[in-house]
Image 1 (cartoon, rainbow, N blue to C red):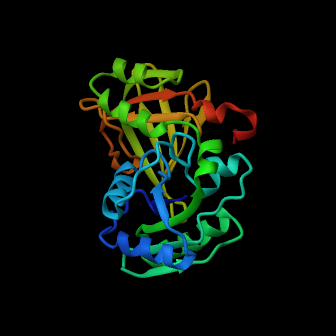
Image 2: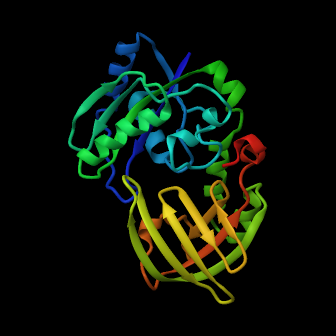
Image 3: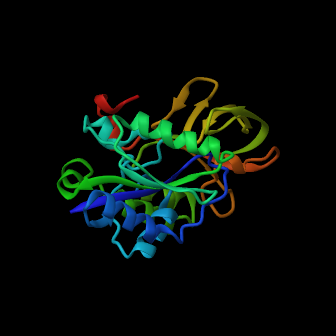
Length: 273
């Protein structure tokens, strides 16, 4: 069968887009390609609500994996299939802008071309997100290249947000920086062409940290080392322990910083950035 991805692309601080027209996007995709869609492959960990709503509105099952190697990625060219040498593109795809414009994008030469076309729509639409449905994948490719149950792992993490210790046990990744409460001291927004960009200074009890953020790309500098994507740099609410997006940070806010080593998928040398 054929499986598609439904995702949003654009600044992380942009408002969500209306998804009531998703069945129309699906029908347009199936008509254009003359293929029946059998399910939805999550684009990344972090857009679960989008995936689940798309599955519900379109009446399709969700595959227990994701395209991003068990995490979120800053660029389409960082997707797991590309890292494994698979000639994968999100196009052909159907898109919807925040202004209500719907269109069909024919197959492009590469994911970079896909992203260029979609980010142009983001720019034209006053930096709002673009919703798209595409990236048709066959079941055989999923079984051979995306054989990790990351969606159920993400659900398990959600069930363990009762304490830091339970959260650490639920995620099978080595902890690089133990949980530490830090305070946001300074935030500087940076223009990054379609990404939400900022430079953040964090003050801890024993040391200070600097964050460079471009949506899902985060680079953390400590007094002794630099840590970056694809390691998992997490900022959590100190009371409820849910994840905080970079655009939700404000000066004076206290957060919990914790850093995990990259997932097993990314440890193979050929997948490293």
